[in-house]
Image (spheres, rainbow, N blue to C red):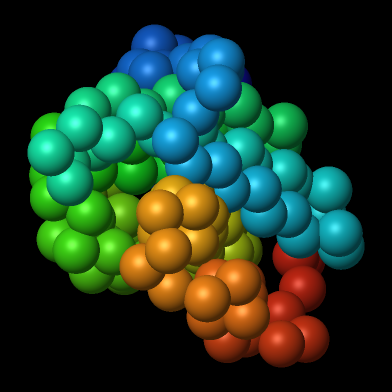
Length: 147
């Protein structure tokens, strides 16, 4: 079966995803989706000493979306929140050894869900106002190419 140009790291994170699951009563929760392709990512975080102590994800989507979720949680685990907020879409794709261009939208969802979870926590503790926690979504009109 052809792997549509996926790197070994993408395949590894898809076949054996890390940090899958739900955290009951998370400190922060982020949910993002792309209605065009139907991918949906949820990230749950537990925070201790201003660091991501535990992180889990639940993703409904293609293999690349699952691999991205796994990788972004691995990248963020144990990091201070400010540092985790700096993880970009490009960082996630690069860490996976690249993604085919038609799957780059998946890496957007991973970083966005992580940032949403951190912002959700910051709103709860009063660090930012709810209106400052709006989703990023800088790629208005971005679509998923037909598979």
